[in-house]
Length: 391
Length: 131
Image (cartoon, rainbow over all chains, first blue to last red; front, top):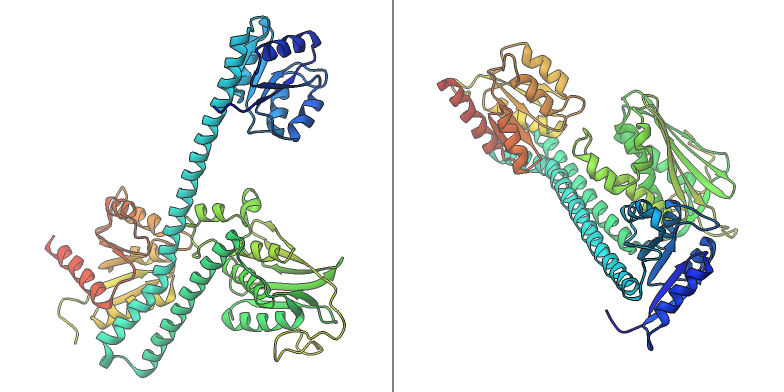
């Protein structure tokens, strides 16, 4: 340990004992220990909140907190700061419990001498440091596992379109003369679709990496969401003719300052999920409206729903990765995590309500910043006027 | 062009339309009869109808997955004598060992060329005839 001062916070309500500790730690000239004292837990926590404390000496029985909960509150305020618990002669069992709860050491009052106290503070600091290192190592291991899982999923997901490409292309080469013209066209189209699917996978991976690194840039422009949704839904209907896709829009056009391409990506992903997890013939309803200066878009399906215990996790990348390989559905499990990232990048939020066997409703709310009158809306070729084609 | 002795019926259990079409078409062109199933339940139903010479089985299927189909077909009390060839995008060695231990006749990793698929199927069918 370096020679710099060790800042110790003593949280103790007995003034006589506080005096004793102060004397011990200050007794030697040039003592490395600097002591701060608090006679109540609240005062101690306030001191911890300011940071710069190297170790805490903690009496568990204080006017405003007793027992193990005292330790828990200290840990909640400053998890990285080592704690030495001070305990009475008759309370050693409690002190041992405190160590099991994460305190680094304990001292029995009345048996404390100068060397023991100093040694204990030093020991607590070093032990905490070792614990931190072990914890970091554990985190790294977990990250490594997530990485392997992601790699396995990427491999699986890329192999599926690759199978189409490899299969059809070798078939076209080997059986050229025995295949009909229409059949060949069909296989070439399938190869084309498979390369699109691979491109999408690669794009998703890159987007996720950029989002996590904070490198994803939004291209915000005044956007006509009404027109955007009409185009999106028209294309979704072509892709999944088996589902009834309904679009509900208010009479006036919905406008937003946002990245149209990214908003569309989110809605596309939600519609794709909705059709993937519901039977053909069922209805998927997309609704958009202005509400409390937010633009709310919902995508509702009549599908299998999400188990209650998983509802909190569906936007969590790690969770989806771990559950993906055992699931029937394909995909990297990045879709919803990506949606969340893109919505939050817009300063919005996304959430889900679901009932098993009845269906799910995904909702996203984007802040509607004021857009000056007369600014241009929408992409080229899209009209801000939505008096036609409302589904 | 139909080769003698290759008229076995092959059941393909695969949920990806393009991959199922690819495998079906290649095997048809090689003179096999082909039955197709898009999920595990339909696959098992067809396998039990009889007359199947070989099953080509994807592992990740909706509903009852490929592992369940494999253990249903190869499990106790009367393991089926129909060879089951796994055709999967899961390239891991542990999965291969697990599938072979569960009674799979072979473990083919996607992607696969038309020629490799054809060879693998005819090899398994030859082995079966020798037994």
